[in-house]
Image 1 (cartoon, one colour):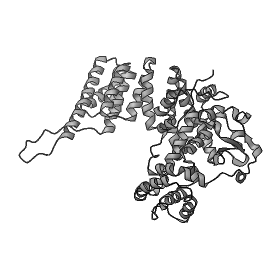
Image 2 (image 1 turned 90 degrees about the vertical axis):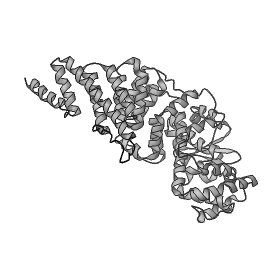
Image 3 (image 1 turned 135 degrees about the vertical axis):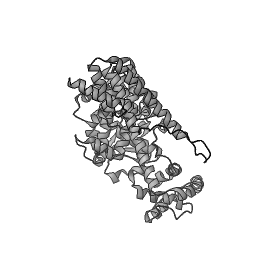
Image 4 (image 1 turned 120 degrees about the vertical axis):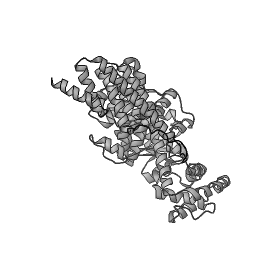
Length: 482
């Protein structure tokens, strides 16, 4: 009896057009309990029509132009709900179809139409993905919508879990590993993610199917901020910078006896990395006091110093991440971005300008004169000619914010290249934080990642289509060993 009284009260409110979206859903629930299915269909069709008319009316209002005093006065469009209310109505309607009437396909149709009016609306995208995930046949499309939802919130663990499960069911191991590794990075105590990732982490890295004979593929890895005149200037000045800073192993406390061959036990497990990136021609030394660092020195030929902790304490994937990261910076001539902060980097670029007569530029200070004195004996005639064309552009456009963004973009690109090789975002982030001497606990990681730019950028890239597609194109897909 109570339900019938409530039903009658709600029906009167609905008929007057005064019911909210939750009240309409409750009304449908009570109709279903009373088995009044004909009325359910009537009201659902009526509400769908109202939503359609409201959207059409909103288009009329938006397209209406100003009229003169003698023009006919248009009929006012009915009151339009705000976007939030209309989205809620679509969601409520879809829920009724899916959960009250069991018409999942109808609910999907409603949400697809809602996305035409509200493209990119996260709640609609997520709800549609959840409904598509109910049917194995629609797993691929569900994954597409979950990926879209993830762009809005890359730290949403429930979405990562669904993407991991779907990829696992579809036997797309590389993607499943990527999603579960990201989930494990956020929550090290997640049993489902830990079990899957542990299954996929072989004791030794997989063998790359091809050698990277050029760095052209790294263009696909460039962070959006990694653009600007600074890169062109570094390319021009790279030879002079290297000649002006000859390597000195004794400075780092390294003896000749600490040279490492590529068949040394500490390098053998990551030999694939040296082969893939052409590092087999580089002299490699153990740098006992280097910690997790690695760096290149310009000796008789390029010389790689590998920190003692990096070799002793890191897994093979972590070693791959740190070495690939430094190799990217060195190959591009950007290792200077790792060594210098924004202020010191500005002084260096100011010295490039000063070499061709542009003295009054952002960043000029006492260090600029020191760099100029160091470089002027090593710069070639061709490099000077190139600088004469680039220096006016730099002087007229670059400020602290632009240079800081560029430096961050360069380092983010290096992180991306390293992740592409190591493939495990959980280990990569843990390594990145240890390398930066930042303690990463087991709780509250989402907030830490969100507030630390390099981690947030790398996390987003690890879940992007660009990342998975590029690994597939290079033939570096993970093939887990079960």
